[in-house]
Length: 263
Ligand code: BV8
Image 1 (cartoon, rainbow, N blue to C red):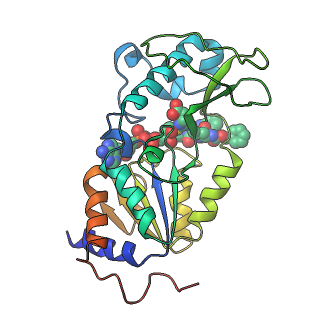
Image 2 (image 1 turned 90 degrees about the horizontal axis):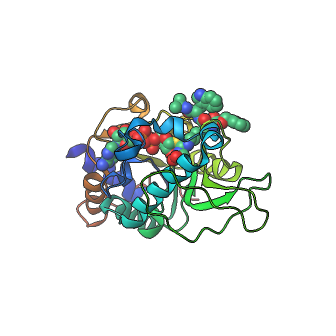
């Protein structure tokens, strides 16, 4: 409890915070994490094999069906107390940047203003053509199997999920925004990520190298443990609301020397 209270005090005095999230923050909304075993028809597949351009080119119906199945699950999910606590931190700390590896929209639906999506979004399908322009996809297929991807209305090419697959570069603007924020923050909260996928997993290390306090929220140890000043063992929906409550319900000193020198 002391670690949580001292971390809450840091948070309450911080001026610049990055909240870096992975699939674990959406787990308590019923959205499986990336490393959870897949279920149903997908049980015989490995997510890392399906989340590749090669898989889509080899079997567009299978890969598009998988993403539509995931998109339908996310559409049925609701943000959990962890997502809501992140939005509460944004409302109380002067400068907060939410950087997520997730492709769901639960941060937005919890009230986070403009999360940086390092790996794209399930809700931004785009044309497979060179321009990769956004494609309108209305029908939210709720199948649980292969579904033929739609054709782009503008140029007739196949439509692909608007996510970053393994072997694909991250969106430059998103990665630059994440690195810029991590290099300047007082505190980086890394929540619900296994810290194994690069270059996203570099973001907490950028903050640590720049002198920020690194706080991890995860029920399990991760490769980030050695770099973290604090590792709060627990789930996002348990720990984050407790941090917000300890930081701003008056039970933690929030005046005194700010964590970073005033601008
Ligand atoms: C790149 C979108 C270069 C898609 C994702 C060969 C060729 C090229 C690159 C590579 C290669 N070999 C390796 C690489 C690098 C590769 C990589 O890092 N591979 C890993 C597996 C070793 N990276 C890439 O390919 C990247 N691109 O390098 O491009 C390049 C450069 C220029 C030009 C061309 C190419 C692209 C990586 C992005 C892949 N896309 N997602 C989709 O969603 O389908 S990654 C995917 O896994 C997720 O988005 C997420 O980001 C990532 C990691 O998952 P996590 O979020 O951490 O979730 P995970 O399940 O792993 O862990 C959950 C955690 O939560 C656990 O720790 C658990 O304990 C915890 N937890 C559980 N419940 C809770 C909880 N925590 C809190 N509360 C709870 N309730």
